[in-house]
Structure formats: C-alpha cells, structure tokens
Length: 267
View 1 (spheres, helix red, strand yellow):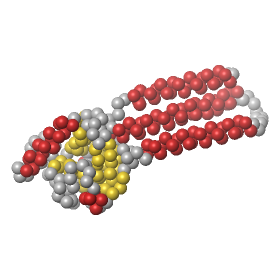
View 2 (cartoon, one colour):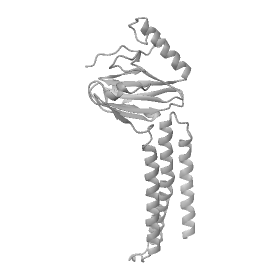
View 3 (tube, rainbow, N blue to C red):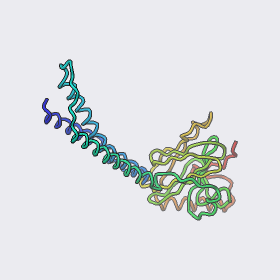
View 4 (cartoon, rainbow, N blue to C red):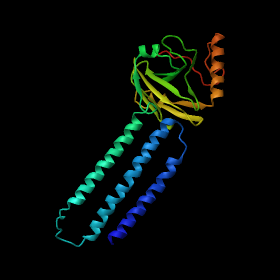
C-alpha cells in the first residue's frame, strides 16, 4: 500500500465518521443549553476524528509495511517534522481550550452559586426548586422562605417555551442533584445554598427529571416530569393556580391540572 493510497483511505474514513456523527447533531435541541453543549461536542469531534484516523492509519500502515523486518531501524531525525507536529498540537490544544471556555463560561451552561440573602434581595422572576427526602417541590415567581410565592407544584415542573427561565436549586435536608438530561440541566442541591441554572426551552413537550445523587433508600422515587408549554398556556396555568390560592383552596393542582402536590413536611 503506497503512502498516497493510505492517505486516501484515511481521508475517506474520516469523512465516513463525520457523516455518521452529523445526523445526531442535526436533531433539534430542546433548549439553548443543550444546543451549546452539542455544538461544542461536534466541534471537538470534527477535530478528534481526523486525528484518530490519521494516527491509526499510520499505525496500521507501519505494522503492515514492516511486518517482515526482524531488526527494525530507529527513525531518522527530522526537525521539520518535529516542529510541524509540535505546532499542530499547540494549535489544536488552543482551539479546544478556547472553544471549551466559551461554552463553559456561558450562563446557560454553568450553574452559579448564591446564598439565601442574595435570593431575597435579587428581583428576578424565577422558579425555586427544593429537593427533599424523597421528592421535589417547585415554587413559581417567588420564594418559599419569605412567603412571596403564590403558585407551587410537586409532581410536574412547568416552564414556558422560548423564554429565559431561571431555576434556583436547593435542598431541605441533605445532598441531592437536579438533573434534566434532555434540557441539559444539572446542579447539585445543597441545604442552605442555591445553585442557579438559566436556560431557554425551545421545544414544547415532556422531559424526565430525576435526582442524580444517591440520597437514600427512596432515591429511585425522585422521578418527576418537566413540562415545557407555550407561553400562553403557561400564563393561563399560573393565573389559574393563583385564583385557586386566593380562593383559600387547600388542594394542590390535582384539583385543576392533575399534577399539584401538597407541600410535604421534610423528614
């Protein structure tokens, strides 16, 4: 096998791998967070695949070309080649570092840590997520600690589509972890501390929420649903829950939308 033929084979293999990986990236992202993460993954993949194919191609060619040579000779010194692969490695590492930093520094990807005082003084529309043994409680447009919230749910976390959502994740007892893989959301839930997640859901539908940190015998019970709704439906649901709350109804959204749960008493 000549070097030119080996190079063509390696190039064809790299193109084939890229074509296989492309349909995965072509799927619509459910949130801006997922979109940024997948864009980074694909950019790194486009760099990694040619390098992998090139290295493996050289290895296979070398093994085949010198398979009958019982006394292999050392490689001759080639400074031009050494400088070339040193510079190429530096360029690749610089690209990976810059691309990764741009995504990891995005507020839609990296969780931010805040404390309770900052939460109470900061005027931001948000959804407070409280984990407990063994379930979740969601407070909309207010804080459960200062009593400003009027809407709460325990079975389904609802979000408006195509609008920025800020989630403040905390825990009532010990360590849990809020995780919605399809939306690219994940944050540890610590008692007395808030981890803030920001995202813009772009696809309506239902997504799986679960606890990603083993927290005891009831860990498997912490499965919930995230419902991304059109803005109009979300606003109507919020107003409906407010009306029920102002009417001194003690039942949760089981009486209206079938997914509210009474605020549980932490263990």
